[in-house]
Length: 109
Image (tube, rainbow, N blue to C red; front, side, top):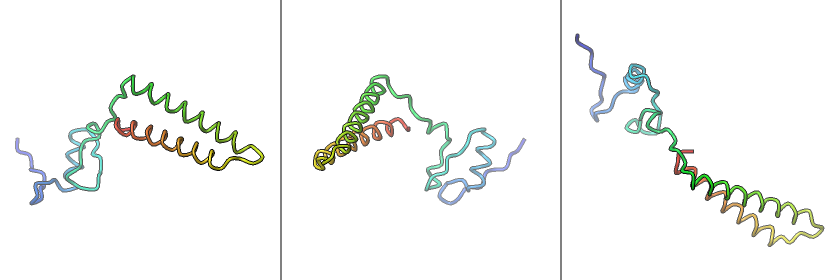
């Protein structure tokens, strides 16, 4: 039995139509990215499991973020809130949020 070869460009890449057809035959979706060379099966990009230690660290960061948020709200409810204190707490909140984002990004979340 002879099968037709998939159209390949001079750079050795499958054409878009051929890549989609190949994915259908192989039964997995292709993830579209900015470059045709970066097309990979979605299964290859599945998020990694977050280790238990990292999960508990993320929970602690989330708890601290919520506590800072409550402190900010408390300060802002005062008659004459200390704007420098509010600003400092908001910076700490942002730093915690960025750390949470970075940790989650390491595991594809």
